[in-house]
Image (cartoon, rainbow, N blue to C red; front, side):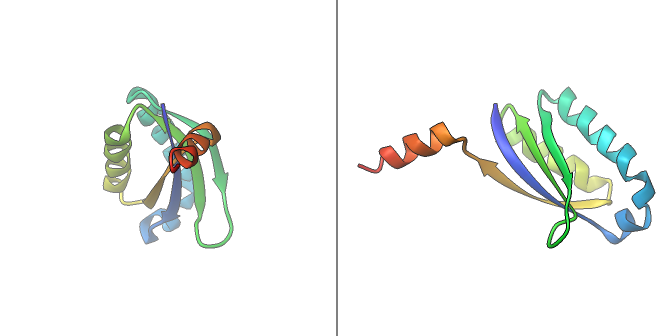
Amino acid sequence: MTNYIVLINWTEQGAKNVRESPKRLDAAKKLLGDMGGSFKAFYLTMGECDMVAIVEAPDDAVLARFSLMLATGGNVRTRTLKAFPELAYREIIASLG
């Protein structure tokens, strides 16, 4: 599984309907689960982003499809970072020679 950090901001529509946000989160968790992925952690945050999720997905295409499906709801905008675990980080650095 590939790890991703998803930075999430409410749109104006999403902020107006913030009380429905927990239901939308539950739906997003189910959607990603149906696609073979999972949420590892979710945080409400203060600062530049409204929320941050740590997720796993089988590959980049699955997470791209998931992100696009979230966008169609019109409640959030996302930015996704592909995350390399420490072991992969060490292997990448070691491969530099």
